[in-house]
Image (cartoon, rainbow, N blue to C red; front, side):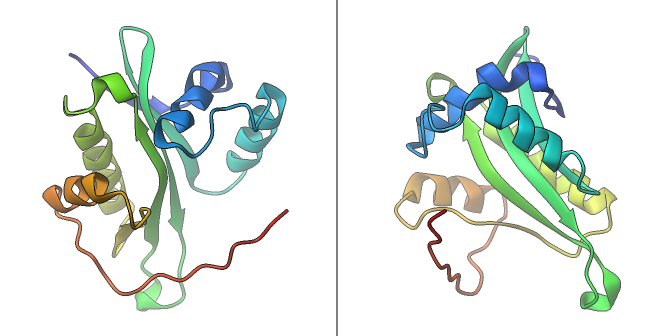
Length: 149
C-alpha cells in the first residue's frame, strides 16, 4: 500500500473526525464539522502547528497533530510535540503508524528540534510497545490537571 503523508485540509475533516472514536477519545459527535473547521483554521495560524493525514487511494488512513515550539532553554533549540495519533482500526499493524511517526521524527530533525515528545494514556500498553519499537523511551513523569470547559 502506497501511503502519502500530507498536511490535512478542511475537506478531510469528515473523514478525520470519526477516527478519534477508534481511540475511545470521542466519536466525532462532540465537534460539529463547523467547530472542527474553526479549530483547524486556528491551528493553521500557529507558526508551526499542523494536522497531518496518512492517505492512500484517496482514503484517510491515519492522522496526527504536530507542534514545533521555539524555546529559550536548550540553547534555543526547538522541540516537537505529537498529539492525537490514530490509525484506522481495521488497518493497524500494516506500517501506517510507523510511517506517520517516522515522518514526524524526520520533520523534527529537519526543524532542528532537540526532542520529539508525545504522551499516551497509561492504560494503552499496546501503544506504548509500538512507540518503544520506534525508539521512543519512557522519560520523566507527566502531570496534568483536568480542566472542564
